[in-house]
Each structure stands twice: as C-alpha cells, then as structure tokens.
Length: 369
Image 1 (tube, rainbow, N blue to C red):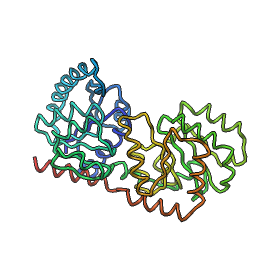
Image 2: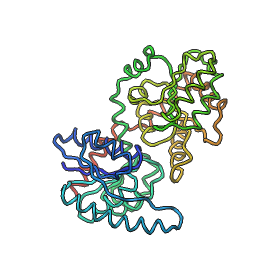
Image 3: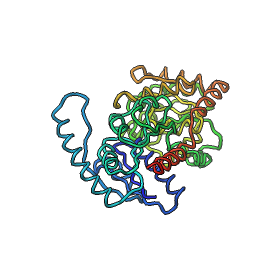
Image 4: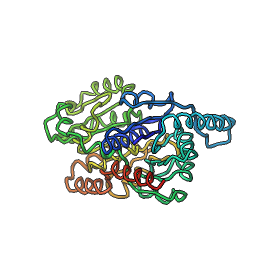
C-alpha cells in the first residue's frame, strides 16, 4: 500500500500518524510511506528520524477573530493545495491519512479533489478547526472519544476507534522502566510529567509539595521537569533536603517513556490525547491538570471524560497548589481499593487495538472507492 501521512505542529498530531504508518507497514510489509508536513513543525525533525520520506508545504492556521492574517492564510491554503496536488500526483498514494494540525487542510483537501481515498483521525474530544472543515470532504473519520462521533455528522463513515498511540505502549517492557530509574521491581511510584517541554505550574506545585513527601514513606516520585526547567527545579528540590528526598527522582526528560509509564502506579500530568490513550490502555489511575493554553480548551474536555468515568481526578491549573495536589496523591496512594477501582475504570476506557481498527477502516474506505 502506498500511503501519505500528514499532521503536524505538535507531537499529539505526529505520533498518531506514525503509529498508523507503523500499523500499515506491519499489516502490509513493503508498503511505501510519505509524510507531508511543514518545515517549521516538529514533524520536520521527528519524521526523518523514523526513516520515513518527508516533504513540506507552507501553511498557517486561521485565527478565531477577524484578521488580515486570515486573508494571507487563504492564499497560503490555495498555494498549499497546489503544492500538495503536485506531491500526490508524483507519489500516487492509495490513501491519504491526516491526524490534525493546519498542514492537514491543504493535503487532505487536495487528495479529496483528486479522488484519492482519505481518512482523518481526531485525537481530542472537541475537534480542531481543520478536522471539522475536512470532515465534509473525506471518506472516513476515526475518533478517540465516543463523545466526538456526533460532531462529525457530515461524514458517512465515522468510527470510534481510539488513539493509535495506545497500541504501541502495550508492547513496552515495564521491568525495563523500573531498571532505567534505578528502582527495584514493583516499587510503587508516582510519575509526574508536564509534557515534553515541561510545565511551570506543575513544577511549582511539586516544589510546594516537597516538605510533605515524608508522609508517604513507601512511595517514590519520578518528576520530569522538562529540559528548560530542570536546573532550577532540581536545585530547589535539593536545597529542601527534606526527609524522603532519596525517594524523589528529578529528571529533565525520559527517553523510554512507554516503559516508565507501564511501570508507574499513578500518573500526574496534562491531558493531551496521546498520553491519555497510553494511560488508559495500561489501566493507570491519573490526576490530570489540563493545560489552559490550548485551542478550544480541548484538554479540559479530555480530562473530564476520564474524570466522569472514575478513572482520574481533575485539577484545573488555576486551582493547583502543592497541598491540594498532595492530598489527592495521598488519598489514591493510601487506598489500594480506590486505586484498583480507578485502574479498572481507566482500563475500561482504553482501546489497545486502536491502530488495528484504524487500519481496517482505511482498507474499508479504499475498497469503497
């Protein structure tokens, strides 16, 4: 199968696309993949590192208020469609798959105009502007949350498939997660992650929580600060020199996140769709602190979906304080029955076969065409 993948700007769009590409390559060995993104997004670095051919188009997003910049975006969109058609005619794909971000707009639209089977994947509960626009032109839509299905009523083939990132994490070796942290196997630990770049508000709350950690003597804390915050945060935690500091592991970044996540007892962090897919696939309880700085506040909607199911606790960033966060951690880590119920609810939301379901949908729309 010849497949064009497109999606960019953030890892939340890129990694699902790569997971879909990986599933296609496993199901149909010898498949050819081409990734079309922008040269300014993370995809321009991440995709070539995966050994996948990469081409770029120039596009920016619409602003939600009236602006002359939107006029320029329309011009870039038209130019992007023209460039995309050139790339598509040259590559001759059997299907084009978009996973969100501005770059999907011209690429998927161009594919639909050329009569190429098209599918988009929506990671969040609330769809982005680009995917909402494209839904009236594509052959199929796959969504990560059941709540999203009625929001794509313009498309004839909408499937609640889950997030393909959930498939990858189940293959992770949790024993390697413990050993990479220098922890004995089955050590209870709380994994705290503020996203790939870190989150200042979460870091501050952890530092406020430092003097309280001795109250959980059997629990370790793995605190991933983000590289830009690491030096200051690590120094501050060291200065505290509080009882139990040997159970606090401050790291700038984790390169084997699937393995560490698979070993974690409790996850604390943002509510990005890909992370939540991995957390629920593994059945891990969580405390979610959605970022308020995302389009359409979609992380809060993601987090509420888990909280309403009993799989997570939700703390809004404006309410985040060290003592509040510690009380939530303490109530979960100190109650094995509650932790088990949250884990069961989390696992009930997980869709570990998401990548396979999306592959089946791709084959279905291709045959229809």
